[in-house]
Length: 161
View 1 (cartoon, helix red, strand yellow):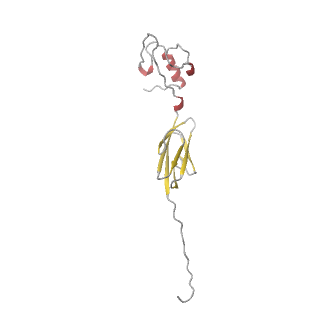
View 2 (view 1 turned 180 degrees about the vertical axis):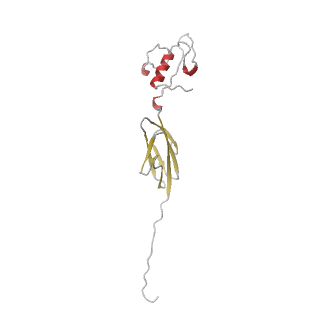
View 3 (view 1 turned 90 degrees about the vertical axis):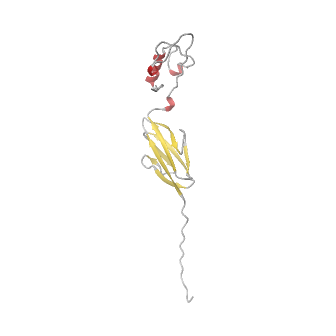
């Protein structure tokens, strides 16, 4: 080599692997994330560092209730997704509040008889047993058809057809 030479070396850092979180909403509500990046239904997909933990929060819209998660989260509590690979989560919102539904269990008491007819109506008067009527705001001894009408009107009983 005859004389001095100048050499320049350029180095780049290794790229950090990323995974993609996709969020969907059903019903009227917003899902946000921490760390930031998701605010669905406007921004529903975000790349995160591989193995990063992402916490999703469901915020129901007016008149809506959060029902639960599906996909890579389940249940109706918190949702933390560990981004070990691409993930997909759906948040379900509905106008019916699942926490206020009441299951009404009916049993005959005494020697009387009766039967449930169409749409949960009672064809004749029966007495309820093993139901805390006072907690439902109903007077003991009321006809079952009146009880059902009151519960349906108040939204405490949903008649499935």
